[in-house]
Amino acid sequence: DQQVKQNSPSLSVQEGRISILNCDYTNSMFDYFLWYKKYPAEGPTFLISISSIKDKNEDGRFTVFLNKSAKHLSLHIVPSQPGDSAVYFCAAREDSGGSNYKLTFGKGTLLTVNP
Amino acid sequence: GAGVSQSPSNKVTEKGKDVELRCDPISGHTALYWYRQSLGQGLEFLIYFQGNSAPDKSGLPSDRFSAERTGGSVSTLTIQRTQQEDSAVYLCASSFDRKFYEQYFGPGTRLTVT
Image (cartoon, rainbow over all chains, first blue to last red; front, side, top):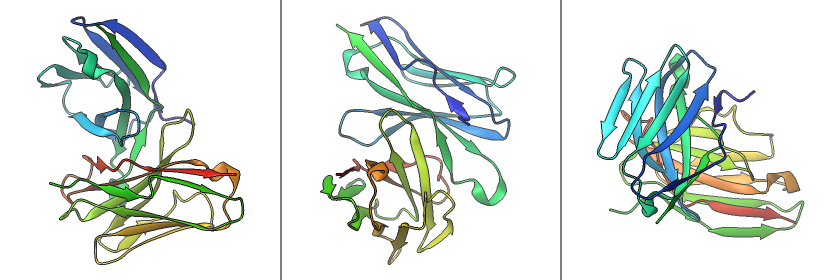
């Protein structure tokens, strides 16, 4: 059973516009959420995170929004740039005492930013 | 500074052979993680090391999989009697103890079992 779901396998946006990547989760014990970016033939790179006690975290062009009641988070990239083209993974941590090192990942969304 | 490195970058092996995958974490990172990504899937957690010990091995798919870490640094993931379903990209990550949720990944080893 997938606990972290990224329902859009791909997304295409125009350069300069906003990119919105979505992620849904089912486990109410998740207390920390992260976004990773992955280029081909490279490992994922940490992008931005948010604690479950917050509803927004912003870092430059990247903002993550968390809606706990809907068990939904989103990553906004504005303005989008061609270099943002990559696969974006949503991940979550469950605070379950001794198991709080483990991240559960979604399947990823391929973002393509067209010049 | 140097990031997480993994070797080999690609490995093709015949079904039934054993393989060893190596990970060199970022210097000073006490936590080390192994994941795998099968085609079209997300990252699947395999095992976690804190120092040289592995508190949780429950993510390992079968007893053909084992991992060790020595000197609180290099880790080796061993797959015995490889099967075709073991074909995947195996990713290693490391982190500081206090920020274990911000993991830094290596480029991965692409394993193909023929």
